[in-house]
Length: 117
Image 1 (cartoon, rainbow, N blue to C red):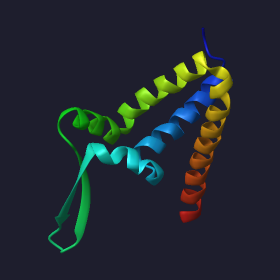
Image 2: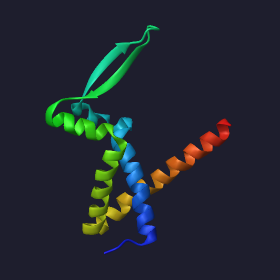
Image 3: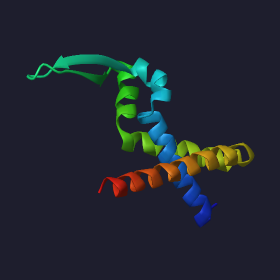
Image 4: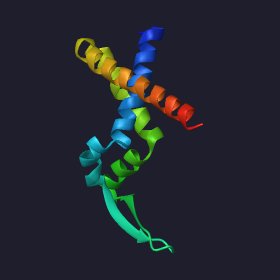
């Protein structure tokens, strides 16, 4: 089985957005929280900074995974491809929403950089 160019494009944009959703977005912070310890440090200037450090053990493994955009991207891409292959009727609407959101995020980033110049 192979993907058409359009399917590959949709899967790529969907994977991009799904990965960002898992790694960075505030809406999924509750999913990441059990895998990280919150550490606060004060800089020489007296500014308090907050860091998230992966826990140890099995939770630490998932913490390391979630703190690496590239690692999470591999697994989320695998999940989305398998989801599409085995459950296309359910996956297509989900993938289309993610793909449109991913492309919109890229366009927004380009427009913001263009406006900032």
